[in-house]
Amino acid sequence: MILIVDDDVAVRTSLGLLLKQAGYATKAVGTPEEALRVVREAAPRLVLMDMNYSLATTGEDGLRLLGQVKEVAPQLPVILITGWGSISLAVEGMKAGAAEFVTKPWNNDALLQTIRTALSLAENAGPAPESAEVSPTRRQLDKQYNFTNIVGQDAQLLHVLRSVGQVAATDASVLIEGESGTGKELIAEAIHLNSNRRSKPFVKVNLGGISASLFESEMFGHRRGAFTDAKADRQGRFELANGGTIFLDEIGELDLGSQVKLLRVLQDRTYEVLGDSRSRSLDIRVICATNRDLAQEVREGRFREDLFYRINLITVRLPALRERPDDVPLLAQHFVQNLRAAYHRPALKVNTRALHWLREQPLPGNIRELKNLVERAVLVSGKDELGPEDFQAQAQRLPVKAEPGALPEVGLMTLDEMEAQMIRKTVDFYAGNLSRVAKALGLSRGALYRRLEKFNIPFDAAQ
Image 1 (cartoon, rainbow, N blue to C red):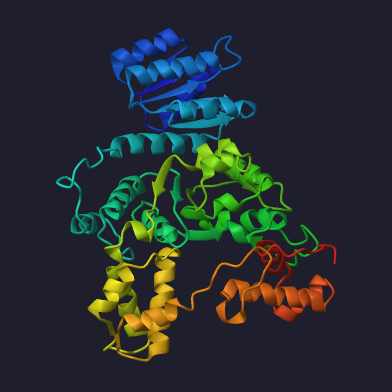
Image 2: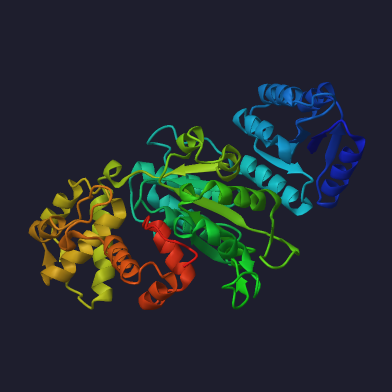
């Protein structure tokens, strides 16, 4: 049974009818006293409550009732209903233990999806492993879930995979945190592959590569003629992901203006294509990833608190590779196995001394750095058996982080640094004429804008 708490009889009736049509039993009450009595005596599966019932225009009574409900039933999921102008109240409610919040006027499909997700999370929640004896083994996890592309046996990784398996069956939004190169995209894909949406699209979006001016076009799509360069209709990423999962990587790089637009889509599950006023519905699972401390970004005013609570219903933290050193040899051998097939070198292998040497390295670039190191050693050495010296020679060539604004020596440049240098030179050569720069580089003007912003290269969009 779902408990509906609202002082407005029309709202209670409307919600009751919607939930009944969706197959849920309900109980509707109009006061906090009645709500607490039902929670104590009837043990509802979920509470759907308005933050601003009665004369509590500030929402304080709503927060008080939430606290009382959580005292009586700590695990009971509570979904808050609030006005768009009172989202700060809902954020306070999330901090106090609410499962989710929806805003008025709500979208019926989005509300039902939120309820299904909250119920599913509550049903799938299980006690976390407290000791090595009850921790799952990799073999047990692989029997239950599809983790084909994820390599490792470390206890921290196994805990992550267990969490992924539990949350995958729901539609809960997930925030994946971790340093660059730790495999956040693989975890996002694993969530999708183990979900009910596995047969639907999995759309990856690197938000760090989308400029503020192109955010709406990239994410929502546009109609031909919607703006100067709109030569044809374009599908947005949300439309491509409809029915499936959208993975928003580097969400911490999104500017504040774009954050507002994203929040509205995630809240209402509707969007509008540029040049078309018709509102479209969305049915998607949202997974975000960041290498930033978003809580700190919120405190410093660079990331919206309401969006933060919208995207991190479940948070998964990936350990750095230095925190799971025993997995380094497994990963190195995995990469060699892939290269063995890719380069048709069946005898290729890494000897034990080399594996031991790799295990002791700090590898600040994590799995991505290890993969690049192994591939360089394979390509440069030309040998079938790689030893420590082959990796040491390549490790010495790793790029050194340059001071801001300075360019490293060409021999130590990363691909990004080489691309940035080439773009700077082309912009200078054509005196900032971006149309000629884009043509010379073989890029669309939009793609050039994204790279200019990515590399912090000053430009005049009017040129």
